[in-house]
Length: 373
Ligand SMILES: *Cc1c(COP(=O)(O)O)cnc(C)c1O
Image (cartoon, rainbow, N blue to C red; front, side, top):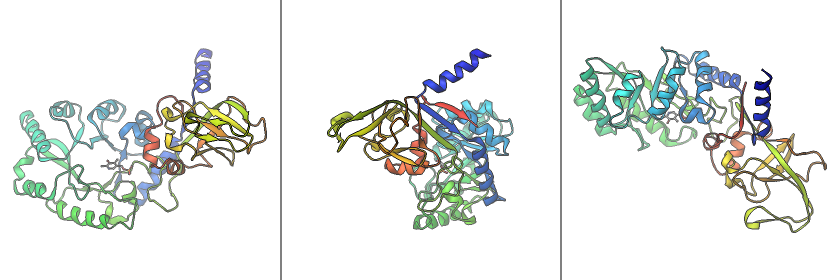
């Protein structure tokens, strides 16, 4: 008992920082999206370990809130997650199956997204060999040139429906390239293409919208929406107020504080030179902990409302903050400063790094002490 507690304390004290995942906020975001799209249903996109937040914790929390559909990218992710879900929940593999992976997928009761005529042929062949129907989603490429059947391939398929023998289509789906930009012309073009293509499969419900698509309006909702980033508190639409509740908080530890004179060089390359006497704090987290090197001399941490600019280049295991704005002695070794939280949103940190919230979340790495609330 005491051993367990001291191990826990040790884990949080020795980690480069604390990553807090608010599962109540996650569920609140799920419910807000569900209310917005009803009667359409909301699936949870939990690929890449639920955007780095831990699919083993995130998916069951969503499931307890009523979510029954989960998307991952790879079969390996689906196989790992399957035992953690209720038997009646459905788990889909977005990127489709590698040749030869079909029996393992069928055996585990996992539903592939069929993205090409080859994938359709392999899934149908397996269904016929097993003498049973196998479920699948069918994806069309409506403008991204990434996954899914092109319009000519879709025409081939509707002209030769026997290609789908043994396959029970649960949904036809497609994916939006610019869903976070409501003004993008491609959205309407993709919607029109999806309407044309799905008309060849009457009675099969449509899955179309990701997070951004949910906010493009009911035309985009279909029967099953597939949000990821909005569940995790990221902004679904660029350039407007974020309606989602923040899910992630990241605090990193200060390991050393020093005062340097004017002209001191800070960090690799000596690229940052102090213009006057400065107080600097070195943190225990760096780019190996998902704080991109692009934050060098650009980003900041926060102590309360006080902005602490990053001075010099971000290192693998540390970065240096200019903490001169704080009274001397405020930050002691072991103090936690905010990287993501009330004063700096996930999207703001991503913008400083020249990237998107998705890349920040999926890059956070494994060294933080994780707390799930
Ligand atoms: C990742 C992904 C999603 C989720 O996208 P968000 O922008 O995070 O909501 C939905 N559908 C497909 C096909 C995806 O690849």
